[in-house]
Amino acid sequence: MPVGKPSPVALYDQTVIRRPVTAVDPAWIVRTAPGGRISVPIRTGYHPAVPLNLNVLHGGVASGRFASLPATALLIERGCPCTLGPADDAAFFVGLALGDVRRLLLHDGDPVTHALWLVSGDGSWAEVTRPTGIAPKILQGGRRRLWDEVMTAWRRWETMGRPRSEQLGVTVTPSGQWAWVREPTTPFASLV
Image (cartoon, rainbow, N blue to C red; front, side, top):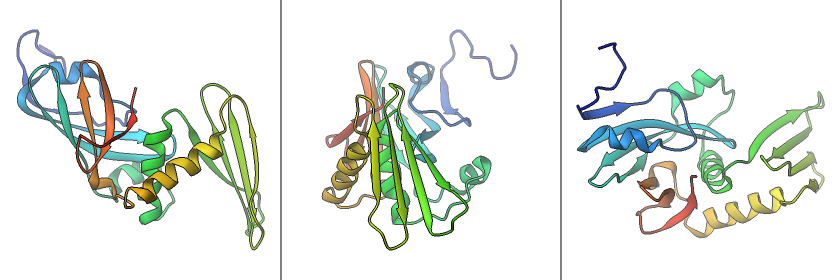
């Protein structure tokens, strides 16, 4: 049998996915034995990938936590020129909460002006520009108010005690998958 091809009957003790994904493929859980582990980098459109380590349970269920930042190898792989700190924990939380929203940071050549673009799959968008020392200018369009969603998610992160990435986790069941804070009983976002 070719390397990397699943056996039709064998279950794996460990499944390692190297390519960042936005959600866990339920087939990985089915192919991993109860008590086994799945390691997969989860990315959002708002933050680079962070490794997730799932423990496989019975009945197509898996649950586990994210690794702590920095996920240095993944950041290098993506060519991320960023530094990591508490803002990255917030960005990862916001990215999980917003689902399909992508973030793009722009500099227009002026070192004191920064622009943030947000776009979603339904065509909604937001642009936030902030010259140094001046209040940000916010423009939004489409069905969703993306900047408002970012601020709501950020306030939720603050209210939940500013959880770090290793305090976040994911549970996957046959009926869905969601991200949680500190315990699976405190979900804050659906991943699919």
